[in-house]
Image (cartoon, rainbow, N blue to C red; front, side):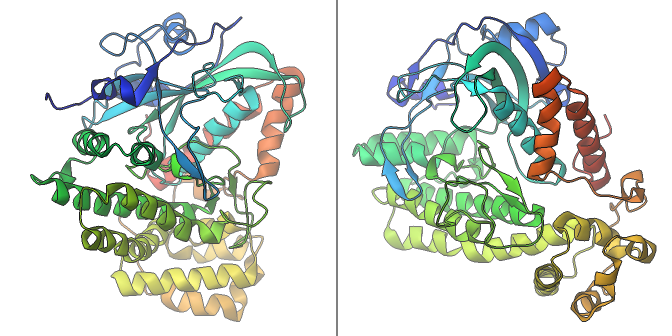
Length: 469
C-alpha cells in the first residue's frame, strides 16, 4: 500500500465527506498574514480569502471536498463514542514553507456534519474572537499552539445559553500541525479495529513524528508513544509557565504532536493558584491549573491502551514513565526561558522554578507582573518602580533572589526592548477579554481588539517568539 501522507489517503472509514454551510454574508474580521505567508497564501486578495475561508472553495492541490474527521474521547473522564467533527472539518492540507511540515487548515463553525449531535454547527463571533486572542497570546508567550488563521463573520443570529442571545455568528479557520488526537486512536480501539490503529499510527508517524519510525510495529508504537509523551509534557510545561488554563482537557482535545488547540473556556491566571479553573462547569476542579500535568498523563495512558495490541505493555509503560521527568525538565526550561536567562543546568533550573512558584504563591502578586519584572535577571530599577515593589523586599523574595542573582541574562534576551520599558505587562485576563468584546457587541468597534493584537505582537517580539516582520 502506498504510504499515506495526507489525511484523505487513509480512506473513507476515517472521515466523512461534508459540505460547508451557506452563509448569508461574509465579513472578514481577522487574517493572519504572517502565517499566510509561511504557507504560500499571503498574496490572496480579500475576495479570494473569503472565497476559500468563508465559502470554502477548494485550495489548488488540496481536497476537492472538506473532511469531517471521526474520533471518540473521554470528556471529564467519561467515555463518549458519539464525538467527531460536529461543527468543523479538515478543509485543506499544505506545507510550511520554512520547515516543510505538513499542516492542516481546520474549521470551527462551518456547518453541520454527521457528528453534530443536534447542534447547529455554528460558532459565535465572540467565541471566534476569544480563540484569536488565546492563540495570539499563547504564541507570543512561546507556547506550541495552533494558529488562528482566519475569522469571518457570517451574518446569522445564534441562540446560546452562555451568551446574550441572539448573538452574532462566525467561521474560524485554524492552522495546526495535524488534527490527529488521542481520541482518533480511541475510536479505532473501541471498534476493535487493530488494523486501523496501525494504519493511523503509521500515518501519524510519517506526517507528524517521523523520528518515531522503526521497522517493526512494536518498536514504532513504543517510540511513537514515547515521543508523544515528550511533546505533550513540553506543551503542558509551557502552559504552566504562561499561567494558562486550557479548561477542557478531554482526550479529543489532545493533539498527538503536543500542539495546544481547540480553545473553549480558557483562562490566564490572575495570581498563582493551583486550584484555579477555567470552565464554570468544572465543579470538581478536574482541569484546574495545578492538575493539568496529571490530567495530561491520564490522557496519555488512554493512548497507551489503544496501542496495547501493537506493542508489549512494558514498552508502553516505560514510555509513560518518561512523562513526569520530561515535564519537570520542560517546566524548568520554560521558566528559565520566560525569565530570559541562561540555563545553569537542570538541577539549578529546577530549583529556580521551585523558588519562583513559592514566591508567587506566598506573595499573590499578579502572575504576569512578576515574570515581567524579573525578565533578564530582574533589572533593579524595574523592580524598584514596580507596583508590587514591596514584595521584592520581603523574605519570600529573598529566597528566590538568592538563586536568581546566580543567573546571567540569555544572549538573546532583549530586556532593553521598549516592551519592558512600559509600566504594565501585556495580559489577557477574563475582564480584559470582556472589555475587548464590549465595543464590538455594542457598536461594531474593533479598535480595541486590533490594539490588543498589536500589543501582543510587541510582547512576542520582545520575547523573540514573533518576528519583526
